[in-house]
Image 1: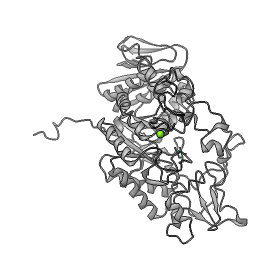
Image 2: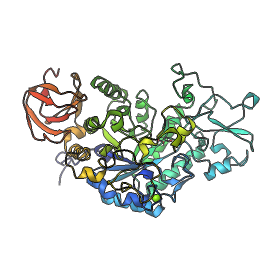
Image 3: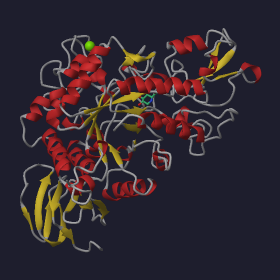
Image 4: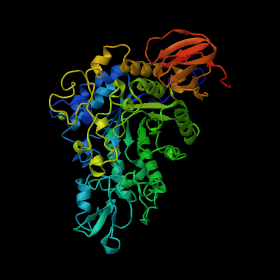
Length: 543
Ligand code: NOJ
Ligand code: MG
């Protein structure tokens, strides 16, 4: 019998640390019935693609019953599937098909608010003494019948909506069709725990918690202070600093409660959409009472694209998370401009190399792997309620939500009908079929990076050692006791050279044409080229 000492260690990393996570926005992934909107049977027909790509988990944006005012982030029934997407049986089939391919499913949940069509809200607004009145945030008018305080909705105007029938206002952090649940009410928290259990029992492997930073509001309803950085160029929604609605201490304890629900099931994971930026991110991991496994970090989408800025952002983030916390990096999403448009198609390869070589869990968005651009949609044609209600500040999220391109056919293989959003530019070259046929495509690079990360201990769990970046080259190392990788990313369109202390070998390069090439004392980088090199140590590494 093997004792503790001799037992070989089988993959010591939790699945959510070792896998790459792929976000699917189901409206835009694959349509099966020709209505121009993606659905679950469509997704089911694409699971082999996900397996081929090598992702270990899917984060699925909401598929619950919804009036779709915010495209599913306004939920009217937490325990049913919207007919637009299919049925619960379709959902079960997706879970099974993913699990058969060893892919986990992380479901988006929206605890902060429901749709105004949810039965809980319909009851709550029916009368002041309804038992569910206190499930939402109701308040008497201020003087002159004005809203109770100065809180602003993120999606435009006051955060308070007048309810004529019962003579009070209700609070909504987002759209008026998205009333906030009252998380101070234990009955709400218990009902939500039941929602989580419903899906956990159905086999989901975890959740991405939407808008987790704004669960609790100040019970005194104190006014927010003016935002000192506010100017006329900024959307009016940013006029005040959201001191009394964001990251309240109670919110943190409610996240801990959610985590406890999850921890009663084996091997599940909790991702959290947290506040923008890095300043508060550490708190979302929790301490003795854990909060999220993976508080989402979108710094790579916010940084200026030069070596010093990227290095600084990485450093700020690593310093902002608690000692020993597992990092997480997000390269795209349904709320953010596309990386390929932000940094350009050439640098999109560098961004991908960065995503899969930094320490922590990589998350990317459907279509990033083929370099999908943000599609051009004018403000007048916007579907996104954010753009419609706060127009003219470049807030439209339709561009990143354009349908996935599977091939070069007229509707890109996405639908047989009229796609709900235009497909966007360059479909002929930027589609899955075309890029699968090109062994040096961006898609091929993604696939190789995912595979390399999976098999290379230095990338999976090695130390992250920053180096002084030289000019336009972002440099860092990933090391275990017996493995050393140098990552050198040229973020410019000129060539660069990195001097090394000793030679090594190219493990992977962003153009996929130097694999296995020996490296001596100089590592040459072509314009926009990134290299992962084995055993190379730069001169003046200062170690
Ligand atoms: C964050 C989601 O990612 C976004 O799409 C949505 O509009 C808001 N939360 C409101 O639910
Ligand atoms: Mg459909």
